[in-house]
Structures are given as structure tokens and as C-alpha cells.
Image 1 (cartoon, rainbow, N blue to C red):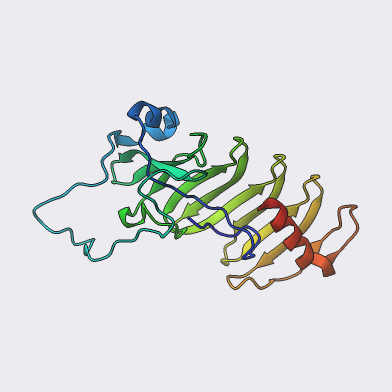
Image 2: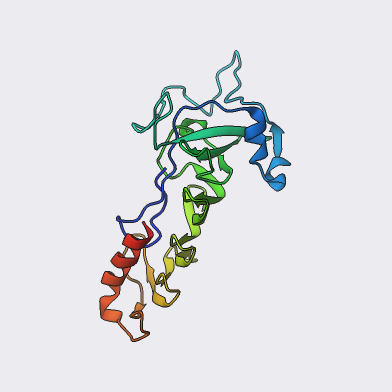
Length: 225
């Protein structure tokens, strides 16, 4: 799934991938935090229920599986585990690295069954965390009704590199940091990625560099990616 670009640049994306893989129920359950596990009404790997009557909420005419999906494990790839469902029927899933069997994501909620095999980016509801292969946090974000309303991105060294939050006007308020921890930029962009109000930027030595903000954004996006 392609998630909201933290810097408002096409260069930077965080991605969930998955490929076919088998797992045991004990493995799946062991990954669920107690707070989330308490919301489940079943821990069985049930992907759907059926009736003699048509469900008016789904036409049954559309099915979306991303082109990156495989039926069997892919070396260097990822796989997705179904952990359970809650009383509303939402799916609790988690993504793992194929090679190491370690988490690539936290346990995350998918509301729409049509998007269990989608990378569209609007399939997650609520908080989520992405991990690097070494176990360090890559990013965190909160999605609400298909929109990422806040999030943070981290360098491989663990230092926070970017944060954003959606304001009351629907604009994204960003803060950027260098890998050293020094503040790099502060700016607000609208839904078209255009600056709203004053944008501030600093070189790593602390001197002002407002006229270099685009270059600084590109640099940090590259280092975080």
C-alpha cells in the first residue's frame, strides 16, 4: 500500500507489501497487543461470511488484486497474516518480511474486504507502524476514513526525520530534521502541495536557508527513503 507522502513529494513513500505464505494460528496471535486482541470476536482465519441473500452493501462485481501480489512466497518480499476480526467485521492483519519472518508492520485494521489485496493506501483505519528489516521503526501514522491525518518518519539511525499533521483547514503542517537531530524546515502545504504562508528552513549549522527549502526537502526525502 502506498501511504501519504510525509514530505509532500512524489519521491518519498512508505509501502506495505504481501505475498502468499502459510503460518500457524499461534504465530499470528502472538503478534497482537492485548489492547487490540480484546476487540476481536474471532481469531480464526475467516475472510468472509455468506448468505442466501445478497448483501446490498457490495455489488459483487468488482475485485481488486494488485499486480505486485503473488500466490507463493517471493524471495526478498513480504507476506500478510490475518490475525482476526472485530464485531464490526473489520480485518486485523499484519505484514512480515519473507526472509526473516519479522514484522514489517504493526497489527493494522482493514475495513473494506475489497482492499485486503490492494496497495491503494486508503485501506488502513487507525494507527499503524512500519518497521525496517532490522526491527527499527521506519514510520508511524494514523489514518482516518482513508486519509492519513498525522505521522512521523525516522532515519535508519532512529532519529526522527519528518512529522506532519492535518490542520483544521485540510492543510498539512510539516517539520523536518536532519539525521543529526538538527531542525531542517517548517512549512505548510495545501492539498495541491503548494506552500501556504511562510516556509522556514535552516542549514545543518543552524543558519537560515529559506530559499533552499525545496533542496532541503529533497535531500531529507532521499535520506529517509
